[in-house]
Image 1 (tube, rainbow, N blue to C red):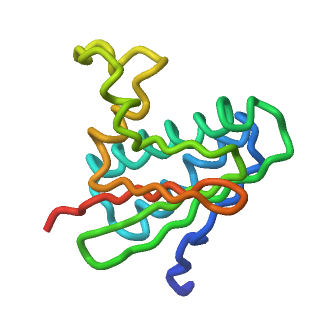
Image 2 (spheres, rainbow, N blue to C red):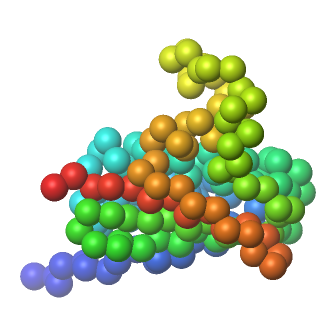
Length: 149
């Protein structure tokens, strides 16, 4: 009988900063979700927040130009908290700046379904915690999620 595969997913995903690389994100997150038995509703939140944050870095921070790496790190802090940390080499941008939210009109439920301009609101709605840190050569966004139980 073959030994059970207990290999954990790689704790880090490195992307080349191209929208095509987004295809690598889904299977990596699915491996993390399966290994850590993350419930489907939290898995949805994770996918949504990571896709939004990473696509924004690629489209806006890197201007769609290839050759700029970014990394996504995963950590399980304890049985009830998981954290994903995105580090990029883009110009400074703090998505948690209050004015970015305050300057937008109130969102209707339909606004969350349309692309454009609501990504930060989506992350604030679906993530348990958000933290930003400016790095010497880029940005670090930490997105935390609370697991039930």
